[in-house]
Image 1: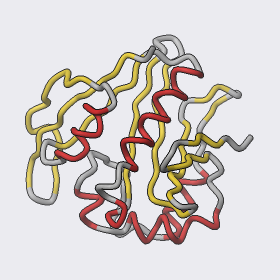
Image 2: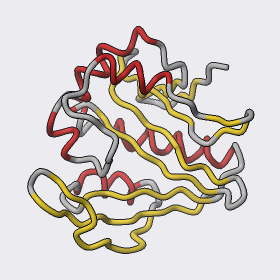
Image 3: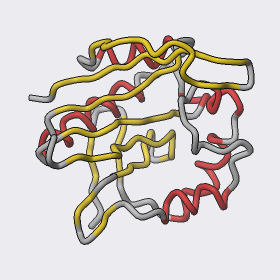
Length: 176
């Protein structure tokens, strides 16, 4: 079932239609976008086939959702991806992850998308969202703080990048 979460700037849709794959791949193939993410699974180069594989990945087992992903639409065009994963229904928590294409940075898109996901997460019964941010990604840390996420701690030299080890900042938010 297609779901649309509407804000003032963006619309989030879980309709991961193949027609978006080329635009998503073009934005995700930007090395600077990848270098801002604390992700083991975000490839570079990022191809249309990678986008299609992401769209087609399994997000539930026996009708129990363990992940939910959305395309961020800005002006009707894809601007990035946001989603929740590692959903624990027992603990009512999930990891939240997002990225926005570089040409859409500094427009409030990530902030509003995160606000919509937090509201949606509360509506489906989650109590806590958490994420990690690489220590040099100050813009993402600002997005999280703006949305009520609190810094829980620093994981020193926890992530290997092309430039060496980076520390990760752990943020979380208790939903209302």
